[in-house]
Image 1: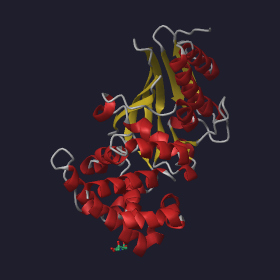
Image 2 (image 1 turned 60 degrees about the vertical axis):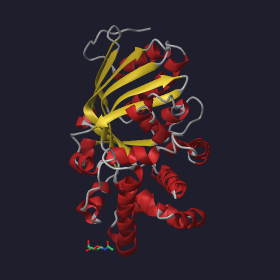
Image 3 (image 1 turned 180 degrees about the vertical axis):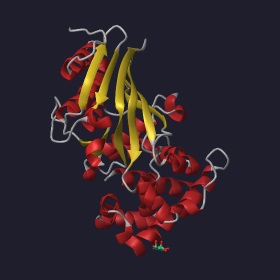
Image 4 (image 1 turned 90 degrees about the horizontal axis):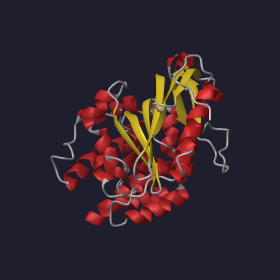
Length: 345
Ligand SMILES: *[C@@H]1O[C@H](CO)[C@@H](O)[C@H](O)[C@H]1NC(C)=O
């Protein structure tokens, strides 16, 4: 029974994922000078530094191309770069076919600082960078009736009870899909529908028990979170984040423990189970971007930190934050499309 549940959870995790110059803070510095100076300093920190510089350059280059960087500065002594985001903030949407269950959100001020640890790891600290649920996800959570009961927190019950309670929600979601598909926003229908369209996956999902419901539940339970650090080392890239109280869905997320649920689902992806290593190696081959995104978001969290689980592939991390339509130094395709918050409203 246990192993069957494990396989379900693991399948659900797969389903949901498938888818030189220095400056001292002078004002008015051009954004490309600030970006270049930051990237150059980080690049000089060895191979982990190179990986960190690639990520920073991918992110900031995409924002520059999208004319979103205003008023930039880099303070080399304090190792801090600051950027004002034009229009008061921006949203970065991942290419839908990647089936990533969150989007990127930038506040009006983006701050990136760096440090080199004694171990050789390079840590980028962020302020103003968040992950947000997909548009319509939390509205659908309410509309489908998932808010009508709350599951006990993972600390107060055993795995099995925790799992069974969330399974109930997965079933509610499956019924809603059957009866009310047209009430689901187009972007979320796209996120979900490919499971139904893929005979092999939908068959497996049926056999193993509601993988489809699980995958929908996970998308709808995406936790709003603020990215604090990305750590680059020989052991891959690990992210840490905290609950973002400022996002619209923060209360719902706290009430239903979205972060714990996501981390629980990610267990096999990060290799934290008997079969985890296998899932991870398969997942990384079939859907490298979404799989590495899941790894990036989980392995640095306190629950797993001390286990020394290998982090995400640095090349994939750089491509995640790269603007769609551009390619990285090794031909990696960019994944993000940026939209100014101002233009959206
Ligand atoms: C379908 O949507 C209607 C209106 O929101 C709701 O009353 C009904 O319970 C839903 N059906 C299912 C099976 O979720």
